[in-house]
Image (spheres, one colour):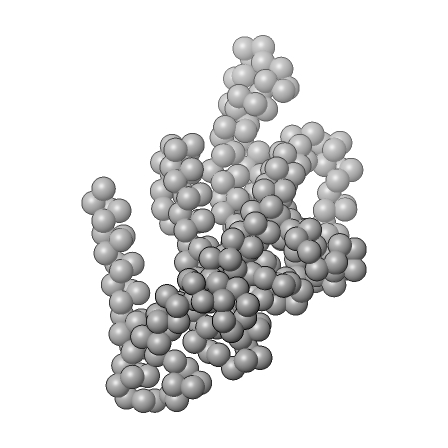
Length: 259
């Protein structure tokens, strides 16, 4: 509890320091024109107004957040439910690893953003095209970390289990998977960050609603206050989702903590 309170205080101090420096540079010293880089007061006012005002991009902030979350969570959950079992199977079953690894090694270096034009051609600019881009971004991290977690299972634990008559699948589900959970959850957290970043990129290029779409529209309208408000919202929602995943880690993995 003391460590958590200390972490919270230091986090608030860091945010307050940045806001104070920003306010000092814009409102007090006037180092940057307000039309180019608005003050935190103006951005906060815009952030509050956007909760009910659809101008200038045609939708309120909650509508944009819901649209982004719908796409992000769809693609992310697809990446987790396919990537984690695939990484486990590749690490545990040698022949399956020989079969799947060449294809995975070819797809792994391709960033999710590079898939955007192809997905637009295949699925249009709807939810599915962006969800597939996010799936490909989160899929890789889930596979790699799940694979590494299984491979780090201690041989002595498997030897003891085999000595007591455990079968191959029994060792997988009772020893390998439980001991790999820290790395699996780490992969899920990395995938969450990758999927959120890919979502914004996908919405910048092909979307009719969402936080990335809002930022792109307001860039053309020269509304830096709305752009910064959108960036703050992206960071806040991403941090909140990471915090939720950290809570899951603390419950599932002994010794899990916020990081």
